[in-house]
Image (cartoon, rainbow, N blue to C red; front, top):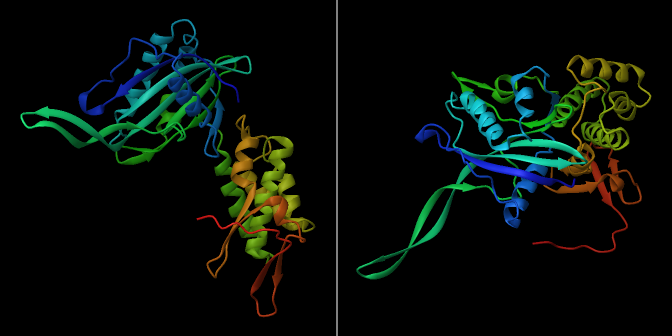
Length: 334
């Protein structure tokens, strides 16, 4: 994903001091560490928790985004003000810095809103007094997360078609946890995330598998592999293909599975994020197994289904043996 940053600005959200501190000057994108930091933060909005959707054309946010290229600084302040009007009403939403970024991706223009909360860190402080130089250890309570960590919350909006990708957190409003960003800020209900879909698929498959006495470890391995395969092939989850791979010749189980996941909002037409294949590779490209004797295995899917490399044997006493084969070398990593 090649991102070309055009403009960016940072505003400070210190709830104790009142209103946000709005910058009147953009960040210097010729500075490599600033450019690298923001690029990584935008890229890391693509996760298995990312939700997708499209803004209503007549919505306030949609109309506001049309100002992003014309008057970026004014747009950023107006966007953050609208967001903060809602955010400040929460009892537990933390202080943070927010970044607004205008960038180009695949010839399309996007705007991103990134909220990065503070963490507590220690640093040195050099002071001079009547005794000479004194080096002290102090706490800095406004440290931002590193570039390798994703933003706490964020949204990217395609300025042409108003499609968006969103990571949101639940905070407490009037004693109740809620997804305030989608419900109050953009006022659009996004499609469930990839992770939400997989949770529904996994739970439904387990329930149906129990009815047909399918071993749990084997069934969940089939689910994970089927999700991975269908995303690799189609760029989204094909529930019919998942049913075929998991329940094979059991027509009743396949039909029950498809009906139940559709009732819970998981369909083959559900849009996915642009980077869904890359996310799926990292998230579902390996089988992670924890055995009852304490042994843990991380097995690539290509290895898991190869009986020449690993084999699961059901013993007469009900236990399971795992045999790892044809290993040329063992590397012990401390």
